Length: 101
Image (cartoon, rainbow, N blue to C red):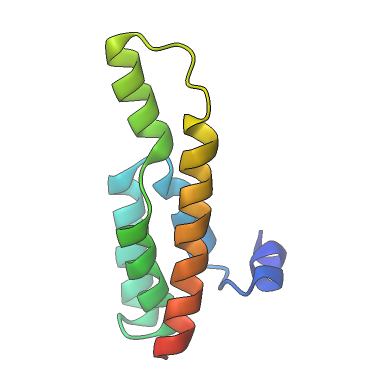
């Protein structure tokens, strides 16, 4: 997983938080707090984690809860759109944190 992050210009510690964020906000918050303790809040990793948390959503959790509660079975493009939006949020966090540091 680290090699993929290095090729894309992402620090390796960010990738687990980005993947967990798709499923659980509280688990991603725990990972981000650990990143803050290890790297600091004003480091590139800390800034990227902050921007990532603010610009992405728990796509899989929201789809399962909201669509499941009203009985929607065909989600059409919701999953693709949500994952694309999360990928754009991850890319934006990489670009903006690089500009700030």
